[in-house]
Image (cartoon, rainbow, N blue to C red; front, side, top):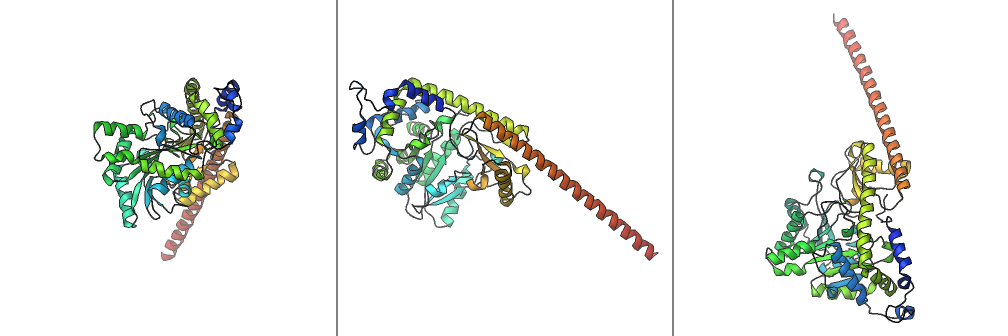
Amino acid sequence: MGLAENQLSFDLLESWLVQNPEAAAFKGTDNAGESIFRQLALFQDYHGLPSFKNAMVEFMSEIRGNKVSFNPDNLVLTAGSTPANETLMFCLTNPGDAFLLPTPYYPGFDRDLKWRTGAEIVPIQCFSSNDFRITESALQEAYLSAQKRNLKVKGVLVTNPSNPLGTTLTREELDLLITFVDEKGIHLISDEIYSGTSFDSPAFVSAMEVLTERIHNKTVTHDSVWGRVHIVYSLSKDMGLPGFRVGAIYSNDELVVSAATKMSSFGLVSSQTQYLLSAMLSDKKFTKEYLTENQKRLKQRHAMLVAGLRETGIECLESSAGLFCWVDMRHLLKSQTFEAEIELWKKIVYQVGLNISPGSSCHCTEPGWFRVCFANMSEETLNLAMQRISSFVAADATHLKRSQNSNKNQKKGLTKWVSRLSSNDGQRER
């Protein structure tokens, strides 16, 4: 329950492979079905097969309801979203520069954005009181905090849909972000690797869609903001293919595209992978049916987890996307501290036998929140997990009640002792 993998729709992918054996066997479509294995084994277009890049941008548009179109010339392929985010940091920052990230955020960003680039992360503090939504005051406070640390802010990075919250950014939040980066003359990176997992309302809206509308309506101050909004995408979550290592950067800035393309030489996507997936993504009937069915399954599994936790008295943040829930266990903490959160987390890992992620690992501002994944297991496994959590909560409640009764008895005993002592003292005084 700690790994954000989508294993719910493997059967759909496997069915497509059975029905399209020529793609998996690397057989060409324009030369009487002859093998193109040798062709793919040799050097191809170093930075992406044109057929795959075309299929990729069309798939990205499809997920966004074809409200946004993408130019394949502005797409840079990477071996997953991890190098995509790191490459953008190399392109947009110098060592010591900062990006603002709303909390809670994906723990891997501490590695992806900082380790090799020398960039810094400054948190945009978000709270449960407004469902961890991004506010203008929080943005400004983070910006001022960076300035006080003598950090030059180069941009804001958000995940939409959010990892770990499972929520989608509202149009108001996206408008706020675009206005903010426009006024500050900085960049916005929108990591949209969960865009195809939106299974309920409010639906996913891409930063590029809102930006396009703002440019069209002339409600941005600088036209240059068009080149300062960048999209990160991947097939790891929407298609459940993290092992295929397919990611991408999309940018309207020619300089960013040029620099990122050069840097992508250190993490290419294999020609064989591109060939297979270009055939799959070009099958529009399949992609439409896959997205619809996968979202349906995610919604059902999400509902199972939420209902199971609710039966034990545990609530979740209302969410509509992603492969996980943001679970509220604050009432199970011995004290409202991050130390108590880690203590509870260790019990769940070692006693209950469930691997979940504590909110502190995501830099959450409040202790007691946990990320719980639901798409990387069978229904039977999820039901077993719910049984274990239920037993743990019941046992914990019993232990707490006994402890409280013991404390009450101790207090009663102390009260009686003090009363007797006072009575004896009074008799002596008389």
